[in-house]
Amino acid sequence: MYFKRSLSDIVVKTSETFPVILITGPRQVGKSTLLEQIKEDNRVYVTLDDPQIRHLAQTDPALFLQTYQPPVLIDEVQYAPQLFSHIKMLVDKQKQKGMFWLTGSQPFQLMEKVSESLAGRVGILELQGLSQSEKNQTEGMPFLPDTLTQNNRKPYNVNSIYNIILKGSFPELYATPQLNRNTFYGSYLKTYIERDIRQLTNVQDERLFLTFLKVTAARTGQLLNYADIAKDVGVTEMTIKAWVSLLITSGLVYLLQPYHNNMTSRAIKTPKLHFMDTGFCAYLCGWTSAETLSVGAMSGAILESYVVSEIIKSYIHNNEQAQFYFYRDKEKQEIDLLIERGNVYYPIEIKRTATPKEDDVKTFRLLQKMGLTTGKGALVCLYENLLPLNREVQIVPIGYLG
Image (cartoon, rainbow, N blue to C red):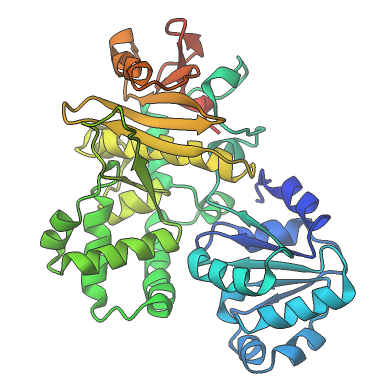
């Protein structure tokens, strides 16, 4: 089963504007599947996962591009950065739109090579795992509390949402319902460590890196404390910083930055770490059932990571821009998420509750004291209906995300 991706129409429009488009994102989130579903019949598909084809691209890029002429879709292009300068020459010579469709994981290193060779010639788009709206095949839009309207969105109770959290967002788990979750994530983890990590850095002890992944996953939705993780893993703090950078590079985690300005002297300036796929996070932590996860020690934190990742994906998959923050001060007053668009700040509180109350959002008042222009806030929770909590805040069911 194929799930239509929100990015599909944007890919087509971008291809009409640029000679090259590049889709980046973590491994197995559906980048090549998306492009294969919407490509024209005359567009050749070639993957650099094939060792022989990869060798040709690396050793004789000119011959490779004679063999696979545009319009062409090149999958996993990060394996042959040698292609980029030759693509540039072809693009500058032929001056046609949509000549090359490229996909690649490891976006940070890939971006560096693309920026050097294809600046001004490439439209870059990002893809993450299936969003909530894509799973339900409903129209998704960038999340903002003041644009939400009543609709027929599916309500989620505590059991259904934690089943979704446990399953995660990788398309293959939904396209192949009989696929065992543990088998998939075990294979994904093995592939990630053996291929991506070895290519990105020289990890001497893969068992230590696996321990690091598990220790880090247990801290999703929490302040990032490098020293604590280093102590639990048994490596240096510098190593942990390098490894966290790898997770960011791989698109597996998002560091949510703290908000502070000259009126927030007591604000904490440590980022929060969120896994972008809660299924992978739960697998690393050893959770095997939604029932135990929903009442376990991580229930609140992993729900927060799920909501934050869904909101971020709603922007990524619509190719829209926003800045995301959280706020916490030394008095432990906190706002789980701040969305900044056009210098307007929208506060979001995330609660594992079906009985929301005004006291849940009392920290929203801090924004006015900071001198910020605020939009409508949201209390995202397990309540079934979209409803005003007060004049400034909407109660938003989790089913309205994405």
